Image (cartoon, rainbow over all chains, first blue to last red; front, side, top):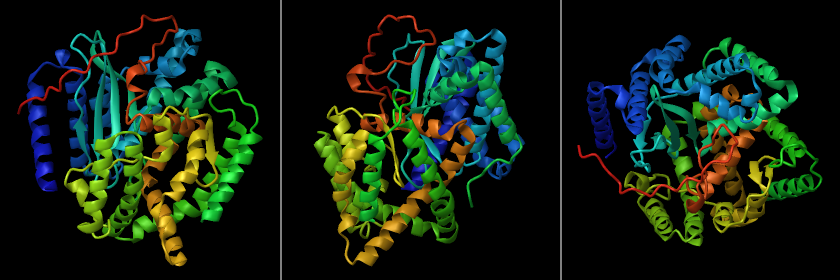
Length: 214
Length: 258
């Protein structure tokens, strides 16, 4: 039963990737984009022993090449900063987005090194063809425990579709950071938030990636 | 344990009453909540997390799966009742089928054969039922030992506790051993997630609060951001009033034929 399911899943992934490799990514549909990214990332992570062992450089490489080109960090940061975004100078905006980006990369890399036997199912889309902002909904099935809900907000930009928010287990990432951002800004202004983020990032950079406790 | 819970509840009530003022309107009891959060953190750091880590490393995988399936099966009974109370008859019946299958062919719930057979597990409690009936969540509330909650869910908790079949397991020593095993097993399942949380959060209290409140709301609405008829629109950077968008009609499910 399970084996057959996995076989079908692998076959579907293989088919999907080969099919999309042929089409130009520019006019790729948003759900197809997310599907392609997640299957590429999962396959790579599962096949690479060094990633599973927590090799930080390898994990970061994977994130940089496969995921980052499709994420709109500027928008993500501006949403998390809320009304304070417009009060920030362009230089502050740049720094803030860069630090937030680094923090998310660290977090995502930590999550990736825990990938073992997960599969991803996508739910039917609820958007119409003309929409420029859509939600792609999926769930990650793991060997033990309930499936993890994983949704993406994707918006059409000049450079193609870009992810600008992620929902894990029912919580939107941007919304989850919003409260922290607001309270850091009220304490030390935008520069205070940038400083807190960069200190956090330095701390994360100096310690090895945590992998699944064996 | 039940004494412990009563104590926890009354502590929470006292805390809630004496909660100090704070700036976040969604978290008026922030001072109290932070104190309990730190207390829970210490309990976790020194007792629960080390125990769960040992449990995860020492006991065989099939044992851990069995433990979580067994207690999961007991919880499915109450999940079924709540789904029925919320008018979700299909889900409720499917949950009852799960309990029937798993309790018999699944050897008292140790094997989750219902999931293998395609009956998906749901998780519902009385707080979610109240929410689906329209009871607002009220402010965020951190309960001693039990963790994040809301005023509504705290009020619903005694009902959940009364409805837990394990609560009536005799003899008492078996019940207590089982309860400890259940807590340790649940914590063990979260070990990876909690180490991620450490990395992601600037202020763990705020991050847990803002994430948990969203998650809880999504549980009440079964994975949606809000009630079906008033879905929250994605945020916009600008606060300028926006033209209200029409809710997208649900298109017929288009499945690519392979």
